[in-house]
Structure formats: structure tokens, C-alpha cells
Image (cartoon, rainbow, N blue to C red; front, side):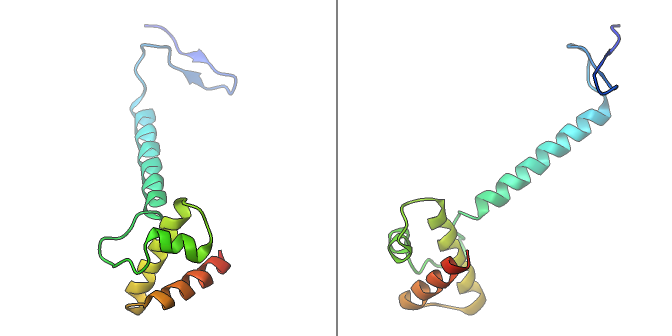
Length: 106
């Protein structure tokens, strides 16, 4: 069997074809799981909820905020859905006012 080669930091690395240790596999799996969780959290910021209605559609959000099509539109719609769940139904005018308030805070 081939010996591991030393790295500049003093640790050793397995040569190609030599299996990794169980500890390094667990770390790699945990890193993949953490990356997937971060990606899901980031994606959730832009995705509409299924359990709350959408008061303003994307075009209305872009018009109220004066922005082009972007992930920010999804974030704004998601915010309006969260507000709906916290406070109850909003009219279109109330939703537009809330969006402007939200945009100023960002």
C-alpha cells in the first residue's frame, strides 16, 4: 500500500485510489447537507407560499416598487404572504402601502 503524502500544513493526504477515512467522509457529508440547507433557505425567500393568497401579482409589485423583473419581486410577494398570515387579508391598496414600507426598510 502507498503511503500518504505530506501537505504543506503538516497533514497528510491520501493518494488517488486510496479510500478516504470514515471521519473525512462524515465531514464531507455534513458539509453537503449544510450547503443544501443554505440553498433551500435562500430559495425559500423567493418562492410563493401555498398556504397564503397573493394579493398583488408580480407585475403589480414591479409597478408599485418601480423595479424590473428580478428575484426581489418574489421576495416582495413572499413578504406580502407573510403579512397576510400575521395580520389577515389585505386590500390591494393596503398591500401596496405595505410594500412601499417594506422597501424603505430594506
